[in-house]
Image (cartoon, rainbow, N blue to C red; front, side):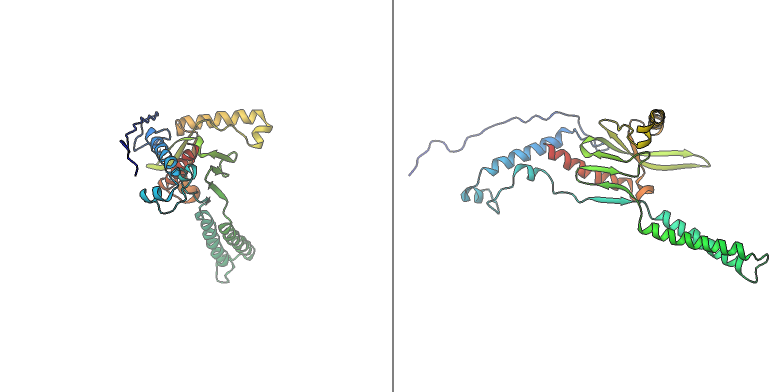
Length: 264
């Protein structure tokens, strides 16, 4: 029989997390509360991973004797890739316009039409039929406007060059409302993206022509100051790929949080 004077003792520790305090309206990636929770979870998993004997696992209520590694436990499950294509409304618009012009072409070909013009009617009908066919093909092969992977945000449809941004390089995401006053007030919602380092012009035309590169930099800087404010990129998710700004921010935020936790 073993006799002990003490079995369990208290061990206190102080965990300090430094950063910018968060706010519900503008979530920040350097919020210390988020990183403190992730660090505390990782520390707990490291401690539990050392308890591999059956008795300790049973006392801790573990369901399996195999403990996950701290890195795989802290990182969330790999999020699926999301591919966002151009809204098919544009293709449907082309098809609708082609169908209307096809009917107009048939009216020109009608024997009872006043001022009948067979040549014009045939040309309109053939062109409108081609527009409907091309619109239907376009509808089935819409270009990719954005791709969200677990590590990066791809924007192949951004002018004047394709953009690839790491999730860890994004400082802030915010929905902005642009109001245009022309024959009434018209509002448009954009997503402003603030990066750690602005993306330099890397399109082939900017690389080949220093004058165009300088013009592009001045134009982009002027647009950013006039419309985007402090943001580096602007995305209109509703017009570009038929998603609401809130949905786009939520999907981006999930991948940003996962990427930041993977670096801890």
